[in-house]
Image 1 (cartoon, rainbow, N blue to C red):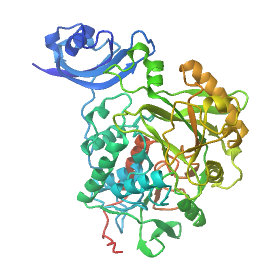
Image 2 (tube, rainbow, N blue to C red):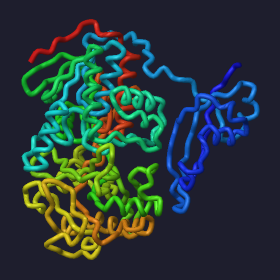
Image 3 (tube, rainbow, N blue to C red):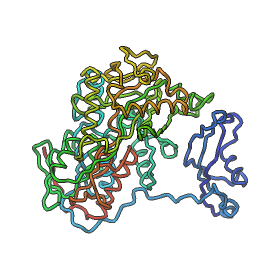
Image 4 (cartoon, rainbow, N blue to C red):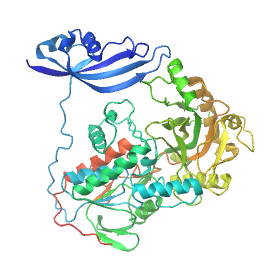
Length: 549
């Protein structure tokens, strides 16, 4: 009999009955549709989330695709929670190549999410991209980072910001995004093909974890190479050449010159020296608002109980997260939590000598005893200390260098308990049972003497407000570790509707560093978008440049 596939949304199952008296999923779906259970076939989970608004009855919320007899469609299709299921998309369907002549294969600068997915998209269409990364392969990079965390020996091109996989590799690996783009499914599918857990295809808040990301980015690189691309590490682009507003060449490591015609610029939000090169060569950059603050750390159990009540530690519930926002009427600034890492740790993320930068990281299991997130305050261009395009970078450096000095000039981070911060109280030790996870270690300080007054006032207000929304968030023993400055790029490399730089032909800014993304997923999607713009404009390369250095 003919069958039709439908999508059934908003199916809620109480944890009070889960694994006890809850009937099979097919029975629940059939009851929701009002049809016999034996008419439900090929049930597939499309989305799985948690509704924890009522702590007395937490709900799992599902969306399913199922097949039913075509003759039953009329009985169910008018229900508000039923639609026809989307046909399976050809996620890697080749695009028709453009007609404009391409002399050399495209160049991709950077192997963060935008660079990797731009290169992969180009490689799948036969463009054989050359990929240049200033940092190390992920294995070597991991060793360099561990050495920095334990000894304070910083390598400026191999750290949490630079190296294979970009800054997102040493984070929680969150894949949540606010963008609505069909390319997100393409990215998720590629990630699963590279070893990501299949659950990311339907989880409400998917994440990869640092432990998985190390393997995933390596496999993405291997796929690019298998499709004819080449990837070069320890290869920093130190200059570019232009002729008649067309990019014509790049310089690698101050010594090797390569002729180019099309370049994807996916350099990440911390490539400050590259921003300077772009300005020197007349590329149009603009100031962009961002946010700065600190990392706040609590026991994960406190967050679990605050979010799940008596259901905390339930086998169907992962370590709890949160997202909190407060707009201050006094300072006209917004404070919010950022990059929340359940069961994770605060990490040292500096990329320049003489600066302290913090970030958060979790493995896939999210199984440490501590939860952390950024507690940051919006920074507008009116707060920048100058008018140039890199004024936001200058402000970041001011905070980072001040934190370095206050922490002891050895990459230890300045830290303070929430209780002492709210009381504006000096203390020579952290009086708390919450032991900060940051390595190489912390130095007790009064953060009110480090951060600007407007930032402290806004954060203080937010802590008290958040404590009412999430019980225990403002507990005196929670730890604040500074500073969190690399929330997003303070710069935008201006591009047109076709993803090309507005004043340079052949230059395609992409991802978070260019100011067009915020996080792993949106950066990866932007990389795909930029690559597709190149493919639909240019024909396959007429010749392949050999790189020998």
